[in-house]
Length: 185
Image (tube, rainbow, N blue to C red; front, side, top):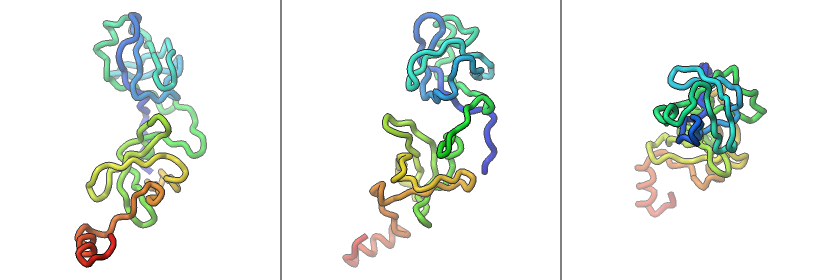
């Protein structure tokens, strides 16, 4: 397994909320953004002193940042949390960095590599960069689509038939020859 990072991404500083230095968090991992947690922003360790909003749209204020003018220059900056501060995950849960770079396969067929984990309204999904260089594919993290996840082996087994994607022939040339002969692809 790849080396575990010392810090985990918890979100990014979004637009200001009010006049006291509070801000919305974009791309939040709400599990990491609890009141009293120490986050690092631009190399500075700051404590979360206010937490409101929702899990999907948290609003934070950090110690030492007490005005709208103080937070505006930090907009877009990443918030990270020490791995030791992260809560334990339940069975079948992974941090996004554990899945990034994993090979995605259906049996012996290499589909591609996970480029990132996306949080969608209905579920999380893997963005998979195809091995053939085509457009990225989204694989929902649901039981019918994902057969197994083995981060230690850097492997994720998926069901292409469920996703409506057939395993591609060995080469485009083979597909062209089949079509020319009148065979099905």
